[in-house]
Length: 553
Ligand code: NOJ
Ligand code: CA
Image (cartoon, rainbow, N blue to C red; front, side):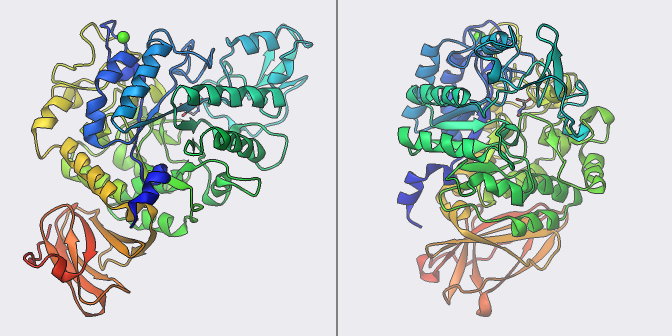
């Protein structure tokens, strides 16, 4: 397919990499990650093939929710650097062809933000209506409490003014009243500010929680923001954190008011992916892909396996959730809020490298834009000593000695120890090892970028002839790519029927050497090893005359 398209709508087959400046690399030896340290590591991301870095919040904060509690939207947390360091980072990333987006956390501020201090100073304050105040708490569904370990209400009494303010999350995170035009103007100003400094868009935190005085979610507000961004820079994106079932979720791409978010995380497929891994049977994931509505032409689904929060399983049934718990996090201490796991994928899979390679091969072949959480490329583990969701937010491991800081590490979560500690899992060693996860993920990213059909194309989940195998094909502008994955730790006999291809044609393997002939009626059969992965491009036979060997993998 034509690559000119992929240059314009760059997000549709981007490779997004989420990181927290605080835990990535310390540049000045004070034990905390910073922009200077991160900038020095840009070539790791460039070699990996990342095209877009998503920065978790880097703004001034009291740090009670790891930076998702902001006290100033227009500057950089001094522990992480200065605005100058930020701009130099964005500039250096751009030199490597990498765009940068950042978390936009405007559902709420910190209660220490000057806006909230002013708002709570008196009932007549000019900023009173920037937040949501009531004489009495409004009724709410207890299930709406996001952090049930620490909160039992969505309303908190402000002693000074005798009214209650609304907080979707922790009580120290009062919700901004995004129905107020002044608040909306201020939010647009924040976007505009960071866009001027070089950001290519935002990951929008907690989208469905944003407040708007119309039923059915903050659609008008999002459409306004999108229109504002289009006026400033039509190539900037909004990547929405919207964890809802598909029918409600797809409304956030735009529901008639105009375009809204450019990309939505596919929480549904993510959860079914883990269920499929637990069962060693991809049926649940295949069903999600079949059910999923098509994203609008200029929009895209964002595919991921892990993020910085708990691995939520809230869209599975109770029984399904327990299947995943039993397989990947049987200890109570590995579970959180009775809905998720506070683990990273490699320890969940017991460090089984071939199963990990399968998981990432599936991820990069799925229809959408893959999003990695830092360290996934090397199989970084978690630190269960840390509290709650923090367990996965460990310092990055650059070398056998850790390589995070030349001083004593002072990140919120101490480094991983044991079999996933830096001695066993680090960038330096894996760069030298062609069989490492780092090499595998680098190759997958290269192939993913070479096969824009996977992200852009119409896709079909195929019958593979074995229940352990997920086979899907993607078609765009005459190009066809087929991906086949064996979720089981046994061999599988694959029988594919590929309709509508040229006759004759062959399947050229993109991951290992080998070409398969496609027989009459589009039939192709082969044996796959345990956790086997194959990606094929459909080609005419004479394009590859010498190589007609059919190899199983
Ligand atoms: C969602 C973020 O992913 C999470 O880490 C944070 O605690 C809440 N939003 C509140 O900002
Ligand atoms: Ca530092």
